[in-house]
Image (spheres, rainbow over the protein chains, first blue to last red):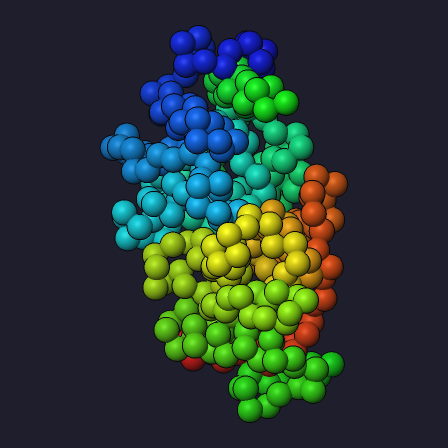
Length: 164
Length: 164
């Protein structure tokens, strides 16, 4: 794993970046161009490897404070599958989900969560309330964090640097 | 406070039920008639005392696992006000919010949360991750729990009793 902050463009790929994380990164970059905090997510039907939904943050665009990338792909995939539970689905996202999104991932019964950058200030998986470790958490996905971390955090760092 | 389970119909009002909680209870009952777990929420512009949005659970209706009553009113009120932050707004809900909804309430900067029944198994305010007590929680609303508790929990108990 290269240290966070070394990458940031899709041109400088780390070897472990999967096509799904590449797509999440592309959604993050597109979100940044729209003036959103650049986070992107992809929801995949695990068995078929089929992308059910891909989205970036849409809070500014929609005026909805809950329109995080993860919420957008969960809603879109549930609508597409006509199912409240996405048990055979994996979610790939460029940033550690916040507590709201982590709890939504649990409600949707998502099988595996893969995320890129860690978020000590706002994350809810490995930080803060650590939603999946709570005794009252009714579904714990498999979690893989720190995937393509340099590229994922690089996009965020560049976005906030440009805004200063 | 009368003990939980004694009420359940809008006819048997406890004295402390405010008009806003009455409306939330009516939304909960309407949700139950649609086959949803009967939880209702109201979002109010605090100063004016104006109802900005009222909704019950809509997961079954919409096929969206995140369509809890609280999320519905937050989205509707943000859309109506054209604002990501609902800092001058209060949320009234019949059941203790789950961790997803509690975190969304924090993201939306809601001023005060009033809820009815406590939810030891699924709540995220006084139970589970206790979202607002986390050091990384960036906004803590004022919280008043147990308001109209008997009526709020009675609707839920009747719903689950009928389904057995």
